[in-house]
Amino acid sequence: MFHSQLGDLIDLARTFPETKIVLNHIGGALGVGPYADKRQDVFEEWRTQISKLGQFPNVHIKLGGLGMPSLMGFEMGMQPQAPSSEQLAQAWRPYIETCIEAFGPDRSMFESNFPVDKGMCSYANLWNAFKRIAAPYSADEKNAMFHNTALRFYRLW
Image (cartoon, rainbow, N blue to C red; front, side, top):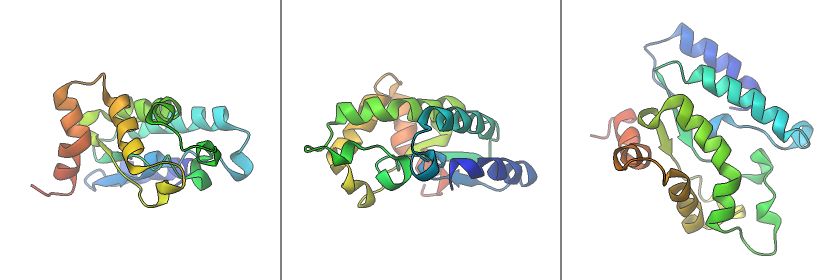
């Protein structure tokens, strides 16, 4: 799903409040094609829609998929050296924090998009970036985002 389709998901969540929905890859805030030079405009539109979606308790969100240059348009994968976890955290923080603010830790779950994200960064740097972003949260909130939310949503416990 792309950010331009989030209004449809809001309608779906409203129409079927008992249906559990998980939004993958933070809702696809596009940064390529016709959106390549509109990162701030896309971010504002995306943030507004994410805030609306967060009001529906049946919707959860996966925090990841940001390493896909073909979707998000981050060019860090084009550098001579792979980006550090610090660089990734700095670029991704506004998106991840917006999602956590809208959905809370109990409806947010970090995700790996490997091997697709391998085009931008290493597996270790991806997860270390997530840990850097999550650093200010409590131990219970981190446990939710890195583990418990997924267990509960997918009924694995």
